[in-house]
Image 1 (cartoon, one colour):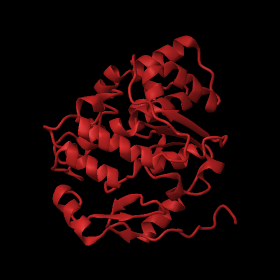
Image 2: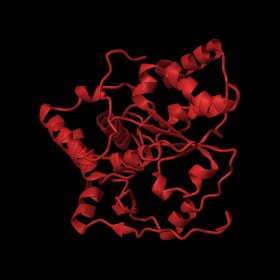
Image 3: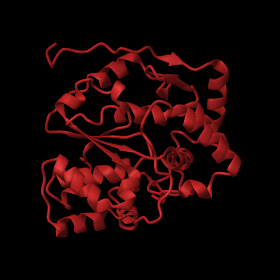
Length: 297
């Protein structure tokens, strides 16, 4: 098959059951039509998605010079984008203030162009699902496109059922984990970035064929530190703060960036339910998650 030949989209789009759609429309005001399953393990997108759109994404043109950032939502995507763009572009801090950053994708590998890994370098970031769930809850309340009206307990139920747009998360991460030995894939954990950002900067630099001094690594780590990152208007979606895209009274796009913050939100009952669900989902994989850190930046 020539690289220009279009690849047929291999999955059927399956809408959710009517009862589920009604509940979603009620609780997520921004999703009045509900959701649809778009691949073999039920990755969810808006029910308005078409096979043509997915086939176009599946055949997204690939440029070997591009570096892709692939993550589930709320797993340090913007943070990683900034790191990857700066490493790939010789630490051009002025250039990083423009919007043309590294390509990023919340789509799992099975919905991206199947030639992606053989053509481009990809940085993938996984995060422990408890913190991802809490962060996604805040995000879904903040962004008007979703406009979730319920509490965290209700959101967690949707999260566990995989009935949230761009979920389920665990299947997304297992799919990437199983590809981690591919030479064009650099698999990172959010928690490792929180624990030792400099080590992850060096890992990504090596992956992208760059060699930076200790001083340069220190400067980049300082630039990426969550306190500085939160103040950076170029990454904190300041252009969306006029109230049309985000609610102005429900927090900020870059939030706490902490590992273990779930402990401030989960009740013991919620935690027990989540643990049980995770144990079931993680059967048969050697992927594991760090849920708290003794020390983090």
